[in-house]
Length: 492
DNA sequence: GTGGCCTTTACCTAACGGAT
DNA sequence: ATCCGTTAGGTAAAGGCCAC
Image: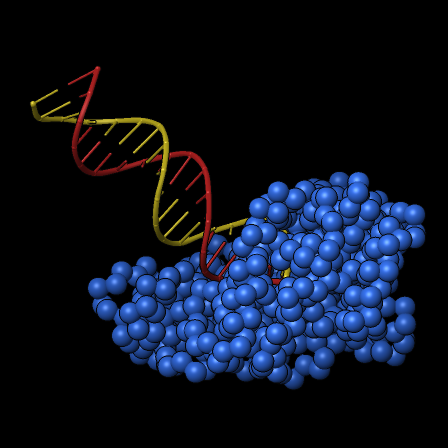
């Protein structure tokens, strides 16, 4: 009999091998990325949920890290007797463990609320909560109601630490209880899987459901490797071919119909040559006459908003870099970075208006992102709306030009800026940057910089790193433009 | 007017881009 | 783990055409 936490059982619902590895070889799992950020963006959803659901401030929180499993179970039983709100109550049955985010006295029993940081009730929550409630009920808990509390991303934070309205509660009692009969079977199957040898399951769709499995690299390393994987073909369903044992582009039957982009990826990959429609690129850029601007934003999007007037998961702009390229190739740079800890939006909007000038194309990469941010600022600050929307009118997207005119085998089917730049402008490298080398570390740096405990020296260091990183981003776009526009003789 | 066939439009979803 | 907007591609519904 193994101790099976609910999350590990969920793993088995997708793939028995995933469950087996979770229990027997957790060391093989890739570190999950975002969860271990040093500086948390504002509040954690769970903390807020406890405050919201503990209006009388008499709830009992069980700390599994501190107390350990056995003590958590004992405390749970003790607190159940007191009929007060309980957070992280622990239950155990048939080797399965479950911890309930919130338990509240309800009628003659208890109401269980599972807190999720998503913005809707996902299908897989039903299985998740079915296991949760099964374990709790089998351990003797009387449940009268089960609910999911998820984030309401249409809610606007009014400030003053007033987080009522952040969470939206959805009753899932029926959906959950109707699955109870199945859970018993899942538990037995899980135990028998764990008692056996490692199941060998080939990688497939299930590896990414409901999110990427941490053992994917381990499993795929044991399979034949394609030198030119067919998954490099953009928007191409590999499943039908995988089942036929076709994993390499060289083995893809010529009869398979590919769209022009896929065809290009295939050809360039197999002949190892980049493709560049230089005349086409020049023609695409010709209508957009200099002076031109090159713009990039950095944002932060905390689940729990920290600034009055912002929504959950809203992308709040805190930094931009702007290069201006004159008619004869003169390059200037402007930038903005707000590390005050206050909402940067308003000063950002003003600085952006001031920096962009009155006319000339504003080049960005994947225009939807920057344009959406600008539109949002226009909505929030009507006084600036006209001037902000005027900038949006000037935005020119370099992504479709890259996609239509350029491909290098090293892109591996992707036209994201991180795939395109090293191919087009190999001499530019982010490796030389210290600290901040990508968007993720930019957010970390921002959070650390605005944290009250951060020293002045450290803050200045982070500021320098952030500025260097964002400036390199737009400079890289200038270099990209230079190649596409055929101005390689310019010294930029 | 109905049935059959083809074309167009409308709608939906997965993939991809950006940000963490 | 999470968000969002755009887009490509597929499918379903609607529309158009003509023979019978």
